[in-house]
Length: 268
Image (tube, rainbow, N blue to C red):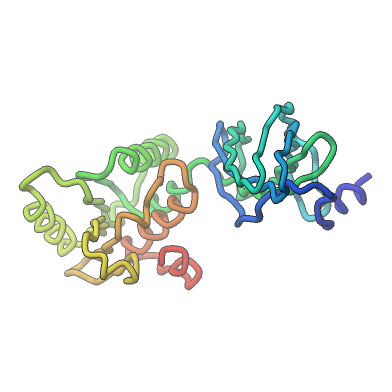
């Protein structure tokens, strides 16, 4: 039985139809709750296609793919030479480490293709915040504020005894109240000179700077300042890759945990 399941992962989808799943990079979602993924179906025929689309979800391991969930079929029409994008919300399980899942897309019994999805632990920031004795989040976007405060609250519940020798961290921007940006940045620099780690998130309005790196860091007095472009943390509430970028940036701001080259590539 295991051999048959392994073969499912190894061979290309068996389809003689003109409708196919458009190949795309693996997707990433946070576990322990419903999250949406997207995929595209293309009809390359000269006639419309009437489909009864169904889905099967498999959790993959090194040796087999274990059936985990089946989504009921629904009728779908794709016009001639049309590509459509489908969104599917799936209740993902809680995971302790990044786990690979495979969504198999079918038309009745015909396999149209497979979608690779990596499911990540729901909070990726706790370990990075543990490098600090205290945290402050000033003028950040609402989604970023929520993610950081949730991680900090979880850490406080699990560890009440923080090392007083650890630095504090402050995250500023990008949404400063009108007329306060200059004063808040001066405050951030003063805090950094005293030994804190500071993450300064800013928006580049000059399109000529778009090819530039999305972050850089510098020693300022006794602390570390990391400047990050806002787009590097887009959709941080739902995108685990954005949370991993933020986790790496926080570790860099601590001055205690240098980044690996792979983490720098992730941020860039």
